[in-house]
Image (cartoon, rainbow, N blue to C red; front, side, top):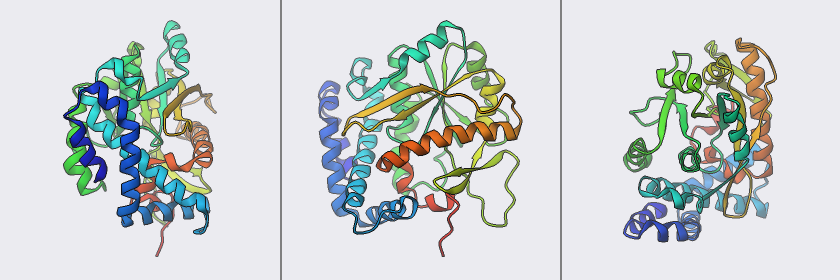
Length: 314
């Protein structure tokens, strides 16, 4: 709520000033959130304890909770700011290294699959920054493009989601329907090879004990648990011979810093078992980042995170 109040107040300022104070504003909002919203703090703390084995008495635990809420505040402010932000101001918000990998692949006429995650900056900020730097990008996520994602909060539905819809005017977005036919615009992007297909592939689907999982979901290992990911997006990209890279954050104080790195597929095929191997390579890289600094994992605030990780508490 503190971030929303700040975002409303910042709207009266010119974009150049807003970008200059957003890091300070997010730290202040995150600190207020940490002190006042006990429910969110308890949930994030509990998830860190269960998934990363932090003891309640560990002083680092509370620091991670605080840093996570600072990131959440930063993302809320960015979501509010992006629709009116000029391209020249984007680099002050998000630093992206490894852009030369994209340039080299484009010179070779290769289709590009950029694998992101719900870790660090919102995908909207990454896609907007890439486009502003001359790398047109399509952001693909899971779910419908006209309704809020399921199991999100009332606050998200009423306040955040309208902002996301407004971003459609600036950021090209499409959706992946798990197990369904690919969106025509996504096929076109991969065939024309001029734009980047940016996929947030870490969508964990809930499969309860004793329940059969759909054929398009594959079981994978992540943080010593079994999670289920959809193969549809990666399979399509691989069928179109897209070159995979990852775009994942690295810790850089309170500055938002993303590193693009090449990724080697684990298999040569496109059968479900092949894509499962490829997704495991992606998850292993993501897991390494989470273990280094879990505070940037945006899913920590999700009420359904543990079931998504295959953990069903009584």
